Structure formats: structure tokens, C-alpha cells
Length: 445
Image (cartoon, rainbow, N blue to C red; front, side, top):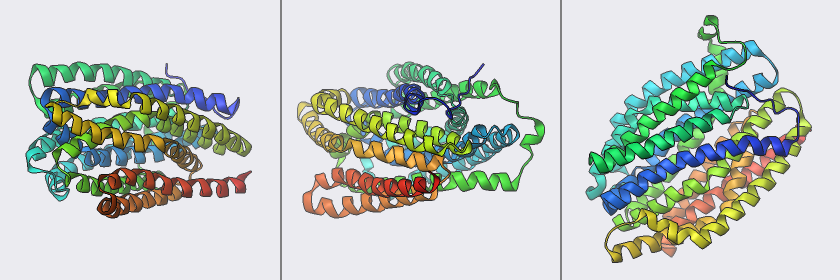
């Protein structure tokens, strides 16, 4: 039977850390199968295929971010009702979340399949990689229901203090993805579309595992009347989820604008930029894990009116996040060049050019990684306390600063302007979140 965990009693640092550790492992496995996709495509299909994969990054993240934002918003209400021990309200919130997510999945599938090609053209995707990029997106977007299924069920489990089941689901999905990658890409020679197919099938499996766990939760089960549509409930869920979905959407729009600038530097630059972006997803794992942990922690303690615990928990979470970021940054400076070579193929001159681009980008990002970690922690704290508007505003700031930096700096300092855009965007968003967190918590404590 799936377990739940109350975070309203006990040592805050231990609760946050031990809740985050399974998430880190789960996210690591999730990123590993994204990295395996990239490695297999880059090594065995070629540099152009790697560039095609990179050309889809922000469009793919647009859909993932929208879904994650929506379901993370739903989990806020679920964690608050769990903290308040409102079992009837909890079940209705869970049922409403699943219903809205299902409808959103159908809508997203239809829209993204229709818009994939126009958006790639809008981003000035080079013609030599357009076909591969489009094939990858068509398969990924056809699997939107699998993606939204995993995210909504995993969000419910995390809101109830269960980070173990999403970890198990992700481990199994990751192993399956590697096997299917090798089969589809190397065995069947399906190329970049095969890598996408492996990812979608793996997401189906992870979603089913989380669904089974939700059905076995040790709380009063969802009854038929809990599924009855309720406009006030749906409105409350969307009020929490829509700003987070919009926040991720505008961040993705900013990323697409940067991708358009990146595409203008040519296929080799796109390939180098892609290699670091895929690796950067691995570096961000602990940040997102601390974020999910903090969101559940603050949400449950707000519901239980344990306001002092919110402040003490955030102090512990911030220290752990910064310490983790500094360790990861040091490792990247030492080992980054060797790791990046795992993604790169081609003749020696191409390899060296792509590696040079990738490693420079990685060093710039690693030097300021602690800012990204603080951004995730403070954004999630506000979300857990039910404030989704400030995080949304921070997303707007990120978009404006990311696009502005990429557009204007690249004309002044060349390629480094594109690399610096990410650092500048994270810094702007983090400053707002930190200031607003302390203003909000001062009213509670």
C-alpha cells in the first residue's frame, strides 16, 4: 500500500532532505533517459540529429512546463487539505485535479500536433534539421496524455508526502527507456523518432505505476460523488494551477526566442548548445527536488497553521540547496569536458568546435548554479503557501531578461551573450522571489 507522510511535526531539515532525496534519485533517472536519448542520437545518428534534437528543446519544454505547472498548482490545494486533515475536501481536490488534467491532455494533444511545424519554422530552424525535429515532436506530442498522467498522479503522491513511489516509477521507466532506445534507434534504425517513441512508452509505464499507488492510498477512498463537476472547486484548482502553467509557458516562450538566436549561429553551434542544455538538466535535478519538497512542506504546515515551522524549514532548505549547488559546480569544472564528449560525434574538427562551445556554456552556467537553486527553493515556498502570482511574475521577469540579454548581448559579445542570458534571467527571477517570500512570511510569523 502506498504511504503518506505528515511534514507538520519533526525536524524540518530532516523532513525536507529525506523527502527530497527520493525525488533527486527519481529526477536523476528521468534526466538520465533524456541524456541517453541525446547520447545515442548524437553518437550513432550524427551531429545533425543532435542539433535537430536541440531544436525541439524549448517547444518540448513548453508542453512539459505547462503540464507540470498545472499539476503542481493542483498539489498545493491537496497538500493543504491533507495538512488540515480535511478528508472529504482532499478527495474532491484529487478527483477534480484528475478530471481537469484529462481534459487538458486531450486539448494539448490536438493543438501541439497542429502547431509543431509552424513553430519550428517560426524559430528559424535550419532546413537540414527541420525534418528530424518535426518527426521527434510529432511522436512526443502524440504522447501528451502519458505525460500528463504521470505528472498528475505523481503530484498527488508528493502532496501527500510520498516521494518514494514516483522514484520507483521513474527508475523503472528509465531502465525501460534505455532498452527501447537501443532497440528502436540502433536495432530498428528509426532514428530520432525512435528515441521519442522510447520516451513516450516509458512515460506510459511510469504513469500507470503512480496511478496504482494513488488507488492504494491509506486515506478514505474517492467516491462517485467526489467526481461530480464543481465549478467552485475547479475554479480554485485553476486559480492555483493556471498561474504556474502560465509561468512555465512564458519561460518557454523566452527560451524559444533564445533558440531562434541560437539557430542563427549554425548547426554546429546548435549541437554544442544542445549538449550542455541536456547535461544542465542533470545539474538542476537537486534544485527541482528541493523545490518539490519545500512546496509540500510549506503547504502542509500552512494547512496546519504551523507558521514558525515554515520559517525554520526554509532556512534549512536554503543552506542545503546552496551547498549542493557549489559541490555540483566544482565537479563540472573538473569533469565537464570529459562528460560532454559522450554526446559528441563527427570528424575531429567538428568535435573540437562543438566541445569548445559546449564547455564554455557549461562553465558559465556552473559558476552561477547556486542562484538557480535559490530560485527553485523560494519559488516553491511561495507556491506551497498558495501564492502563485509572484512566481508567475518571476517567470515574466525571466522571459524578459532572457530574451533581452540574448538579443542585445549577442550583438556585443557574440556567442557569450546567449550563454549569459540564462544566468541573467535566473538572477532577476530569484531576487523578486526572495524579497517577496520574506515579506509574506513576516505576515505569518
